[in-house]
Length: 253
Image (cartoon, rainbow, N blue to C red):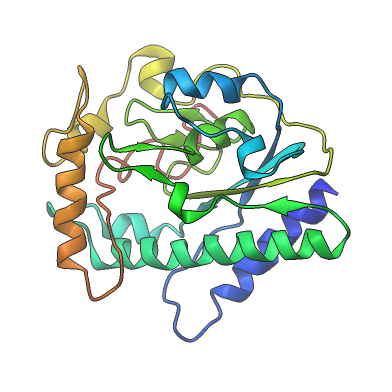
């Protein structure tokens, strides 16, 4: 069943990017599975947000969280290397991937229901606490628990296909074998202290070796959103993701 779910996601991405009104392209998705009762979800109330949701909040009686990573084709991140503001290609990919993730989630929920199972996605209204700028359901941490990667010092998830992409997930009542959380570190800095390129890449000092200022980062996201308002809600930056050893792969391979 896990392979069938992964193929369903892969096929949806392939068909989506064939649409005439879609300009972005993605590599083959990565898919991971976490047990809904994994105690690490409770720990997110400490490491992510005190009111972080649990799988049970999304689907009462849920047994498995299906998480996936949609890696961008490399020309999209490469377009975002130069300049202080994000590239149009990067902003467009953000908007189009938001649409794709929403559609994948709806498709998976309906498809699984058609097979006689229960499934649910996070309601958009429960996504963010805008006063504290913290996520009430952190896609990055959920993907980590599902074994899709480890965190860099830029706070982004580094997967086997790098960190340049987007994450999505749903909860289902199907009991599936959980993937193991990755041991060790994909981030060179956390592994052996040899890299801090993502810190150097930050364009407004929100990311430093001393920590991360989420409000300063949000200022840059807002600036780009205003620039690209004609594309949709492009609250993006991504400079700390591109032109890194981990942009497109696990650099420790």
